[in-house]
Length: 110
Image 1 (tube, helix red, strand yellow):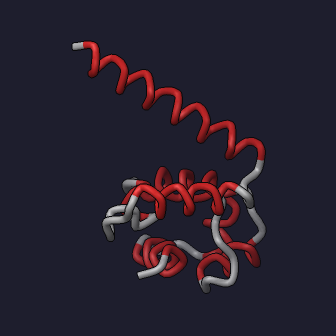
Image 2: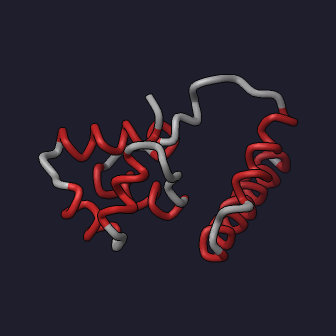
């Protein structure tokens, strides 16, 4: 199931209209409709907020556990995906990578 379909399913199973979810996400209802139909991709901020609203794991919402990919495939997805992100989204990714790197270094030292 694609991310837009998952968002629509979550919204409907929680008895929420597009208008209400759009208000909670602080986006236009038409944008949410385009995301649900796969015409637009959600921003990372939108995915994070949807996961919080519906109390679901971001990885499962974004279907990041679905297949095994090579390092090069993962880097291409990251690189290509970052092209469309806002500065705010990119800042969040940089912070996440920094924290993950620190944790990796800590584990390596032990």
